[in-house]
Image (cartoon, rainbow, N blue to C red; front, top):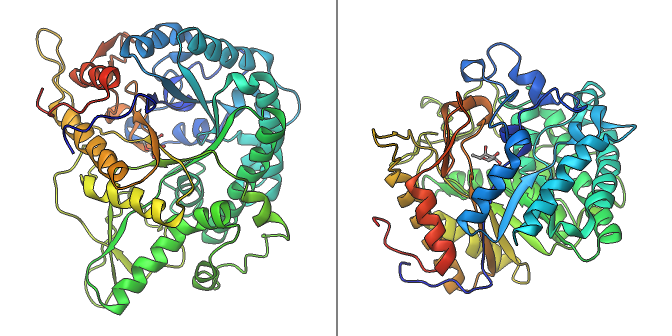
Length: 469
Ligand code: FCB
């Protein structure tokens, strides 16, 4: 939808996460997280990359705030490192860690930028993992205490509190396929993790409501747009099952106050879900001011016919173990290109479809795009220019998809581009660059790519220019 003008109230932002940018892994009392352990384990990340230094944001945060202000952004989504503010995950809080985020929040406010803080973007204190991790209910209780500590310290200086980033990844990639920390491959633990993450969301949401009633409350989900290879009953059933695991396992308790019945029966051979206690689902359904949506690409499934070669092109990393618990008879099919450097297919209409589904199913729920963006192999030309046309084209087409959804009634309030800076892309280390600002990891020099200039113009006027400008 080129030519669309977003209203002035529409929020333009960018997003990052603590372990991906901060570095300073061993400074000022920070404890260890599961991502420190995982990335330091040989063979887990590409080139053995770790977040030890990352984009050195812990030391360069003022410069980075300068870039956010120069881009003219209205909001910045960052995450708080649990092991930095409460090393070990329980016991004493670390004032130096809290002070870092307090300065960051004040720096944003001074520049007229709304702070949007994610409480958990995957860096669980290692000690809590050693005690069972998200498979244990105790972890949700520790999260509630951690939330109380940071909300008391930062309160409603934070405009929006986001409890969790993509609990789907934490649970299934962390505990079922093992391509993310802590790298476990235990299907029953993954489903217990789903529930304890949901519970952690509910408990922390209640804290925000009580301690910072003026702040907005949200959670960020990576919802999947799942299409079937055919309209056969078997393929439609495959879509339903994957939708239950990927989407309704979170939307159900969070927005409807109950797990979907089909999810419980589909997974009955793996677990009886007895870790869900009376009252949990009600607690999880804490009302949200905005639902955060992350979208990158779409998913194509088919029911395995029992003879064809298997296909696991779900875009979620290579592993012998599947993240799709109790769905061994579902194949994930490769999709037509073009692709980003992640190998993810580019499918903007699916983004519109997702937003319209949410609008249809939860008409009263405001939405926020909390991540969207693309990795490409950037080339720095001799004069230093980085002409990342493919990224601009990706952004243009996805923001147009948001405009389409808005024009059809979806209440999308803002868009956060992933990412402000090139950063540590988890299992892919520094090899995949998502930033609109390039980071030279040898010098830590930041350079605006052409996409940054393009995004600045969009944020200033709210009107979508042709992608080729
Ligand atoms: C999302 C994560 C984010 C980043 C992007 C590319 O799944 O939330 O940290 O890695 O993907």
